[in-house]
Image (cartoon, rainbow, N blue to C red):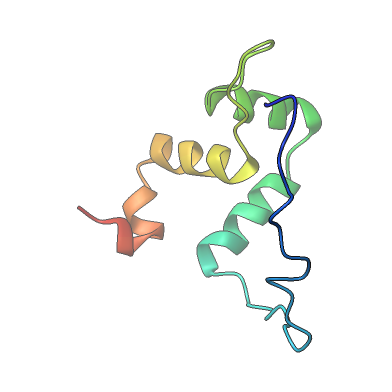
Length: 88
């Protein structure tokens, strides 16, 4: 990170859109399965799942619950079954 950033040519509100809205979307079946899987685990089980996804104490990797879900599916051989768009 720099000590100083020059914003002298910045334009306030350049990307602001008064009518902009966030569009809610429904989670996919795979996302719902991952959410249910994550929510069914204890904190200790979640910690193990994150470690399997690459988390280490003091490390720079910060895997998410979605990353842990992907590793879990890969271990079960389900990755392509639940995500047909990722089939090679």
